Length: 216
Image (cartoon, rainbow, N blue to C red; front, side, top):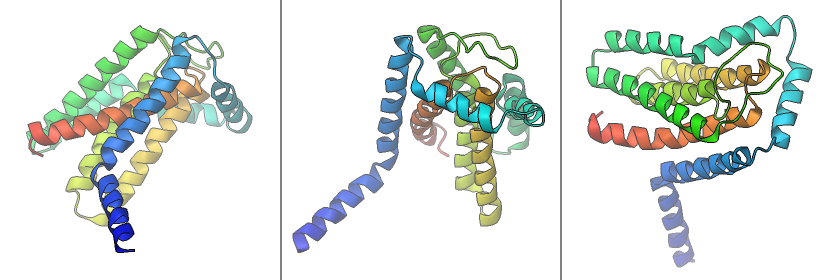
């Protein structure tokens, strides 16, 4: 019994110690599985089901302006302005610089992946958008940008109410941006999901690197 208990404790300790790398591995495998289907020019069942659910339950004259508004929070202009504002307001310039470099790196990575896979956008668009479809830039960049902000809030904000309210609101925003891209017809469900998955994997690496490089 003691040996079994020790074994369980060792397994638990291993998973707790390596949780972030396990998450990275799972998300990366998920992204690669989706990317393989995209590379083979396949339209996945999830793409059809995802858009059907949104078109059936969400699309309306009332919701469309809301989706158009929400999607701007993942756009290049808004995130660039927000990064500049944060850099100016945050006293610790190492943190400000890490936010800036995060945005630059994830944007470059997104464009690299888009140009490698070259997936055309859906044809049923509510708004016009240029460039390739996979992975979704708004979804991928939002997950990386706001995800990193969530990490900073978790680490530095002392007030637990402000901390958790901010984390929940930003998490809802990330999901809402992804849904808005499907709603507006500029991305498939797999574009959004792929963008989220690769960004989570990226964040694990980026945060680990930032902790060592910027000594945060």
